[in-house]
Structures are given as structure tokens and as C-alpha cells.
Image 1 (cartoon, rainbow, N blue to C red):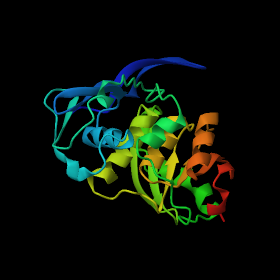
Image 2: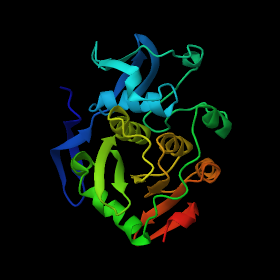
Image 3: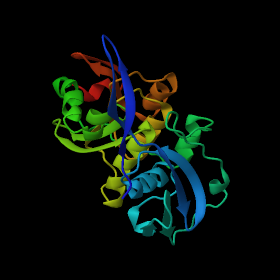
Length: 261
């Protein structure tokens, strides 16, 4: 089993300079394949690789349900191969997916490309969330960030119910990978769409994160950091509740304010 943290020597410089061992988050490439064909390579923190691959294929609109997957195997180190009998659009697989630990999937020309991938409008009636619940989310998340507490170097995505009960957490060096792992778990369990749930991400909100949340049917997305302009535009287009800067007893609502009471 691959480790997700390693120790490295570090010189701590302050009033005194000392040499100690410190923990760092592991970052290694993962090649995602469909039936032996390379689809994407992402830099990720090892762990939950099957969920990462499934979540990526779901949020990219390549697979629609877990029943299309016959097997998920790891034929080599840092390789995940998803086997399916579904009719896959091979032309779409020719697109050049570029993923890194900071930017997510690049090359999306427009919001229309996400609409064409099969992302439906979100449920406008639920969940309804108390403002106090949103205020509590970051504190609840920190109680489950085991690797972050040891390294300080990982992003996290967390799934809550409408009352603020923490259901699941995934961590990764890449913010988009953490969310793919989280969505992938629910995808494999046949639990999509996640229309009654609330998502919290530990950093800023990019276009890719709103896309992935929308593809999973998540109508409420909260973030500790700021959203980008395209993230706000997409949230408005799809009727998503988007909250940013959720910290220090405040947050900003950029869209979908009717779901927050």
C-alpha cells in the first residue's frame, strides 16, 4: 500500500535553528485508463484511487452510473484501469485532458461544454440550510482532516447533510482530486444525485469544482476561500447556492441565496 505522507529532514529557523524530521504530503502521478486506454494523468496523493478514477469519469460526463463499470483494477503502480461494456464516445477521449495539483482539468472552452456533458439544472427546493449550519462547516471539517493535521499540505472536500452532520471527507494535494474522490465514493455506491447534501471545500472555488459539484447534483457549495468569476457565473447558470469566505463567523453568498435561511 502506498503511503500518503513521508518524513523529510527540515531546518527550522527562528530564535534558534534546529534540524528535525517533518511530515509532508505525498504527490505522485496517477494514470486513469478506460479499458486499457489512457484518459488522463493527474498528480494526486495516493489513496482512494478507485474513487478518484470513478469520480473523474462521472464528473467529466464519460460514465453516467456505477452499473456501467464492470471492474476497477490497478494493473501497475500509479495506474487505475476502469473496465466497462458501455459504449464510450472515443472521439471525446481524444481530447487532451491536462490535470495538475493546482488547476484541475483545463481546456474547458465555455460553460456550454459542461451543459453538453449532461449536467442538469439542480433541485431548487432543497436542501434548505440554516446560516448557522454553514458557519459551523469548517470547524467540523477540521476534526476529520487527519493528514492535513500532520502535514498542513492537503486540500479537503467534505459532504454534509442539511443539518450540518459530517458524512464523508476526502483529502488530496489537488483540490479537484479531493472532490473527485468524494463524489466517486457516492457514484460507486449508487447514491447520485446528491441533491439533499451540502459540500464544503477547504480552499478557493474554481470553475472545475462548481462543474464537478453540479454533475453530482450538489446544490449547495461552500468554500473557505474565494470563488473565481467563472465559478460564480456557472453557479448562477445552474441555480447552485455558492458561499465563499466561510470563516471567522461570516460568509458571502454569490448565488442561490433562497436556500439559506
